[in-house]
Image (cartoon, rainbow, N blue to C red):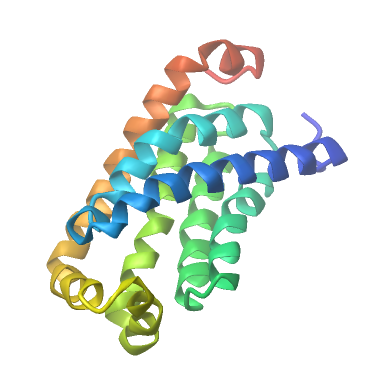
Length: 192
């Protein structure tokens, strides 16, 4: 396997990152209802898992996943989120990249685990409320005067533990669905 990223790989990274962003953004719209903001990472992982798994099958090279995984958090940072989102995302995406690497980019089990871990980046959009409260409230207050206080009551440390668990489970379910739907692509890529 050639380990250097090519122009084709960067095109794949860009195309899949755009598709992933659109899917995650669309699912994220459910967060306009505060209680649904808590299940957004779970649902996002289930829905976007197919996109992530197809990207992994198409671009099985070192650092490609890290680049792909960081584009959405960086874009969200540019759109007004705090620095916590890209920093936390970097940590979980790097772990996911290392899990993929440990499987030689050819282990379906490791790809699924990497997808589940990667999906936890979304939790940092919630963690902003706990760790950078005032800055995040400026962002949230654009949703209306009642939205912020409702969200404040929901985003607690115990609830964040459930959100993180939901993100892992949702990411893994999405990976299973994606790998089953895309079985032909995984076989062609030599991933077993």
